[in-house]
Length: 362
Ligand code: 5AD
Ligand code: SF4
Ligand code: FES
Image 1 (cartoon, rainbow, N blue to C red):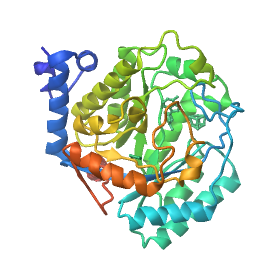
Image 2: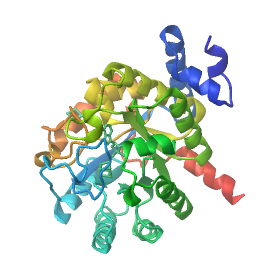
Image 3: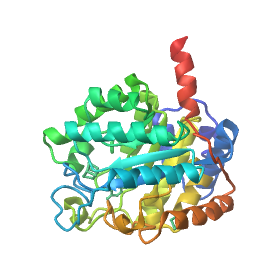
Image 4: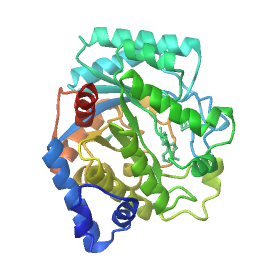
């Protein structure tokens, strides 16, 4: 029985593997416990982060990703500064507490300057009322610091897998894809004072339950504030997408992703956990299901409609034909159906972050 495990207050790897393997009634108990802990620690609110995927130009070649540099079947785009600022104003006006800027990875002085200026302008144009998360990959500590000073206060950098062996199976092994550098980036972000987010893909080829349990332990040991993780979905134009003999069926990857979210909520009770969009690529109400088992953040896509189709990291990405307003209306109804309410106009910061800071000051 899983009951004795889910009611513990500290967990060893075997407990986590048991939770990740739960089926039938055990799985139901796992999900119910995660929901209970979420409501007890952080309440029933879901926070929105309006997401702008502003450019699909990327210098990297992650073996799983549809917008990797070597994929020539992608039409590259780069939104103008004005369009990004407009999107931020839209998020503000729609009373979303926060805004997320994400793009392919570029490391250059021009890119650093551009983002710094955008952050300063967005902060000004929204009266400092909009929380800003950025997800712009690996950068130098100096760049991270400049962006922090300019107004970004949360950063998402998925570790993808906390096992360096698996990391190198899904990335080319070269200077641009170095596991240790990625870890060092996460450490810099935390040191600077960002609310630091990471995440992994679930159901990758070669990945075991042991790997996933280690990912959860990694997040706990790193004292991470926020997590976004979702199922791996093969993209046909990528090296990894072409070798999918050993993949588990999509629906199993989906259920495993839900168990990862629930287990993480039980292990790290007060962090922010996003319901990843990739869940919805498998199940039309995938994100709502995640909210019911522990997730408390949703990132509605507010990229202007005409560009959405070109930001395809994986197959079957949802909402590619919608406009920002369509997603808002649609999501409001969906969240209510998921027995949650929406934290309009609030930043919805990670409670874990606030507690971690207090403890470190003491
Ligand atoms: N399937 C699922 N998630 C993916 N990502 C990239 N490619 C895929 C894929 N094929 C995720 C990575 C990355 C985030 C922006 O999107 O985890 O960090
Ligand atoms: Fe670029 Fe990110 Fe895709 Fe890797 S996962 S190829 S860094 S956009
Ligand atoms: Fe985009 Fe429903 S959330 S259309």
